[in-house]
Image (cartoon, rainbow, N blue to C red; front, side, top):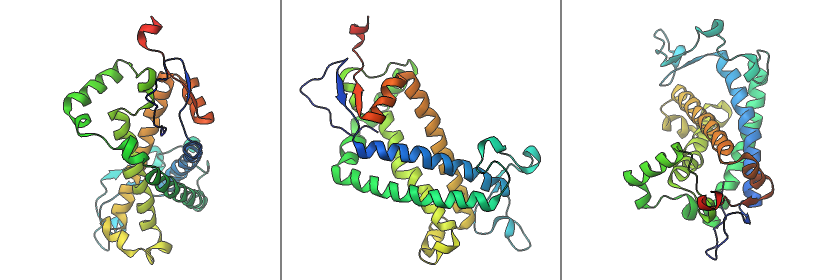
Length: 257
């Protein structure tokens, strides 16, 4: 994530500038590993009961099981996700839970530290909060068309978030990550005693499981789009900026002609 406020003194296209703070880079790569492990172990956990419900009891409702709003039990003999995309690669609910819960603590601690750091530095207010004019339909449509034509910002404008980035990164930081963490806590019997109100907040344990799955799916979707944008924008320059913090500003289009 970009969090360095660009200087108005004028770096130009082709200049090498500082883009990402060390803390941002550490959080980014921690998330890459943590979220990957949690998604893959989560798929194994889902394989154990490939159905999702709303409410408190789901299939465990006495006498009248709740209907599943998502049922993948008919896929591949009841194991919808193959070993190539799960942790562990063999069927083991117990091992998957060990992996999932261990990395859940890493995710929660890293997220809390980064969110606090971003609030203190003003990163959320300065870089991610959309301005009213940016939320106008005309402005949104302009950026959607520009991205569809692969016309990415150049020069110093490449250091600032556009509205689509603000909405995407903001949803990850303020909706999806808190969502998976809080619903995960609400599904943990060991943590329910400390936070019993969370289960009620999400409308029951089965509803929390559904929301957990949807947030995880949203993170996976963000990951796919993010990777596609990195490849299209120039993977060497983009990955270098997240490894070293240094980023070469894209040249203005007239300079490229």
